[in-house]
Image 1 (cartoon, rainbow, N blue to C red):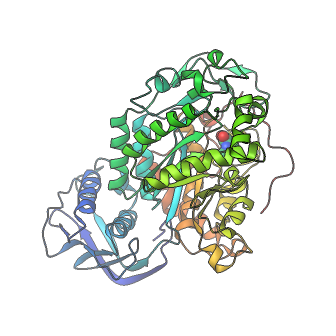
Image 2 (image 1 turned 180 degrees about the vertical axis):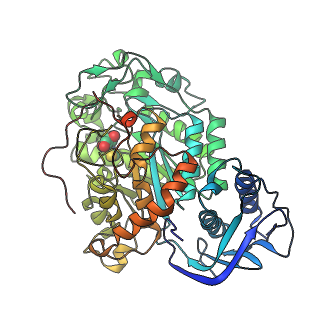
Length: 536
Ligand code: TNX
């Protein structure tokens, strides 16, 4: 049946099948009305069939509280299709499986032929995800992805049973979410004068402005669209580093006693930027006001505060920062960062939310209740899990979608080391050496699409697919240890069915044979990271 991600158990029922046609009714048990609405609209578009409400022969959706909330059972026989989930989310994932069973044309938005036959093979599937956090991060700060692109990505995540979209909304190069109280964040911070093409030794700039942002209504729409697909949108406002765009908009946010922050503009280069936030009461209050608006927009239990790559030079030079260190009895600038993070940890906790940040938030002590996105490998995640903090594993060595997909001169994004489809398939979110109790703190994993060199949704597609399909199977299925995984079997399923689904969805993935001529981007440079290709 060539399902991706593979279900936990799948028994074909020989000789049985069900044909969805204009007589097929769709019955929605209590709690499944939203899923039914989604199914009617998606399948209705592809098939042209009405799927009217009703009992009897047809598609029946139901909740059975005996199953885990995201688990589902799908049974197909001559009488119809029954999908039972532990909650609406489980039903929704079951419906995604049904769509895969119908063949690639079920992913189109209009029927190819009025009389197409929509035969579902007889099958009994029992399925449930391995992890509760199955995520992808879109970096909409470095290159803005207009709202339509984000909605489309939510569809793509849903089709792969991924349930978290982490939106990296702010960085040195751009601020992408409307904050009513501080309009200059998007008016000034949302636009940069030009963009460096490629990384590091590149001397090429595109010489045109880049920018854009989501209005608060856009965000509400994105969040609601995600919720219909049982996806949580986790917002990231990156502090105290990666903040030059905010400082360009409101210079008083920076270390005004050591730099002329009024001269700063949203950054046109890439890398780690020295212009970090100051630590005044006013800066904290400013960000509390920002987060207050963010909390109103995003119901996510987790709120990401970044916390990565915060150079300490300005704090070392700043009398104001040193006064703060002395006043708080802190040992050094690392502890000053922890103090900053703890402030927002407490602030979020008072409002019923949980802080998550990149693994640098471990340096100088982790705030109680904070969770960690472990990106510089597994070490930060291991330390955090041992200390009883929840962890989302996203080691760059495995799941950074901006890393090139192959050696060779044709890769359109030639940065870092090659991380192939097979490397991603052999990514293991739970590192060796954790006790079962510690391992329970690994609540999931995510793949991160940093966009310095991804200037359009087409490039994001190329870099994300098919690797995101392998990632989806890793976080959904209970695969054996990395060395024992059947990559050939996965690749065969991709060839037999899943590339066809991606084609129907209009995803411009990297073909197995390498980039198509138009996908190559001569002139984009960025040498690999130093040292040998990383291994686990
Ligand atoms: C490191 S991952 C970063 C990002 C870059 C990325 C490029 C992380 C928390 N920080 O700012 O975009 O590397 O791979």
